View (cartoon, rainbow, N blue to C red):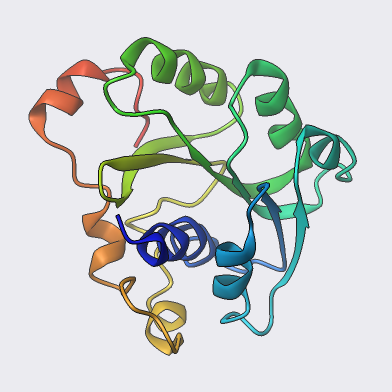
Length: 180
């Protein structure tokens, strides 16, 4: 898998779904690719932390978007919720769509905090989750923001909603868990 696809999808799907993102928190031990993508959004402030301690230090209701590569355990999920604004959203990695039990556990916890939980394709055989308190990733995509981005190699306004398309096998496996 080409890393630029992963970086673009992790950043732009969340940033281009939130109506007015002002503050983005990136949680990654290797955030250079995410930072390069965030620089394409001149008007959005972002902060990078490398671990759960950085997430714990985030102020309550201070983030519009959180992009995370942390393992999603119950403690981290509670911190995400605390740090997100009322209309905030989280983009987080998941092990694989085949890790059904683990993903269902993560989605059930996120379901206590968010209205929308949807897996999406981030390149190769990798998937992530978008969990949103307000905005739907295919209905609320900000087309003007996606069309105005320069320097993208993969992401665009057509790829964004297509990343959320799932086969019937996935729909069946996650029936009642995915919230869209």
